[in-house]
Length: 147
Image 1 (cartoon, rainbow, N blue to C red):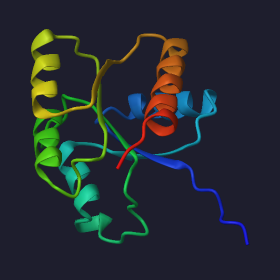
Image 2 (image 1 turned 120 degrees about the vertical axis):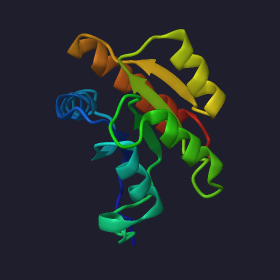
Image 3 (image 1 turned 60 degrees about the horizontal axis):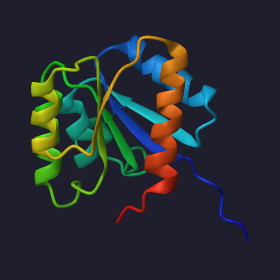
Image 4 (image 1 turned 180 degrees about the vertical axis):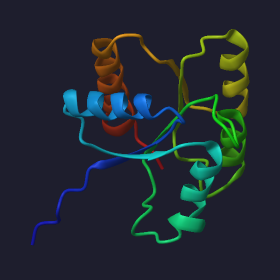
């Protein structure tokens, strides 16, 4: 009996619906073996990861293999979410890639100090976005061995 193939789940936390759509389209464009899920802020991200509120059913909120995280979001920003994820023994092994428009050295240093796995600036063109998504998906979902 063959086991059905399941795409790698990538959870993106970003309050901008246009950015979410662009990333989804870029992942499709680069033929990444990825299922994208989206949340709009850090609070919703933590609800998803901890299976609270509308994410209480594990079948509807499977554990992501990678988190793409914007920094500037309402309710709970990216730094607050990273801090909470990396303090949680059940979640800390999920790779967190900050994916933001900021390229401020203070943001880069702070997020690495909090434990992010990578910091990537959002590109300005769709072609560059496709290439970044291609490289990120290959590295984090095909190359790296995770616990």
